[in-house]
Image (cartoon, rainbow, N blue to C red):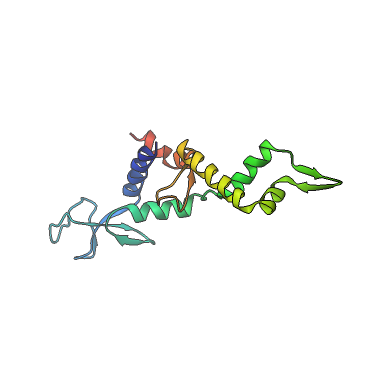
Length: 151
């Protein structure tokens, strides 16, 4: 699924950028520079920049149009769905998630890492930078949906 989304993001990046000859400093919508004849062109995204390739455009689109997954928040929500909101210890009641995090932070981090791994393996979250930043798959699919309808 990740590669399919990546292909669609690349299509979106090409749609949102213009071929640009840096040598002659002109836009080349035909894909070939009318002055020098070069087809080794950069991609220009007005108001953002000009560079070779489209990975930087994809990064810009993701950062500006989608919200990255907050894994800590998503994991806490998942735990809250599985366990009671409050835990009674003796005569005192504690927030279950806070209690778990405070009493065994090492196991909490291990469980969070397991949650991240499971969500990624199931394809629910997708990363294009080796796990530094994740996006919800459904958000990515909604972003590239217009590209799919034009095929």
